[in-house]
Amino acid sequence: MVGSPVSPYDNTMKDYASVIDVFCGVGGLAHGFKIEGFPVACGIDVDEACRYPFETNNDAPFIRWDVATVSSQEVAREFYPGIPRVLAGCAPCQPFSIYNQKNDDPKWQLVGEFSRLIREIRPDVVTMENVPRLMKFRSGSVFGDFIGERHNFGRMR
Image (spheres, rainbow, N blue to C red):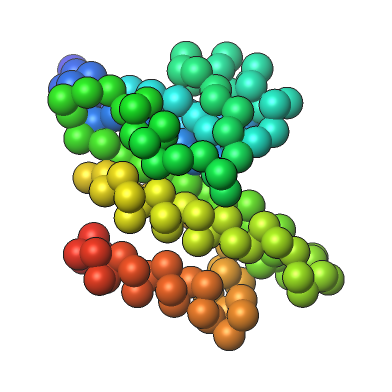
């Protein structure tokens, strides 16, 4: 029908890719994937209060895991088999926020834990979102290390 919005993924997405949303919170990123037809395998977060909104909005299980301690094998088992794997992550932005007056918030290390999962799982697609100050945090070393590892891994294009 002319003028009707049609997703570029149409009905083919059900077999296209399996998405895991790391640091999922209430599931906004996962919900965007769901709206576009991507099957969301699960959301992972340490905050149990996010379970109900995540599961309600995404028709996918919420798994309460600490990304700093979960094994990559445990995470990889959650992907749907036989289709490309998307690992999405929005590490907590508080350490990089202009509103954070502490310089030693340990949550900044979670970007490195997300990097570890990428390195060990080797997903087909990686997406990461954060605040602009991540690029300057610790003189750019946190973001630089993340990007450098992706280049070395051959996943940056």
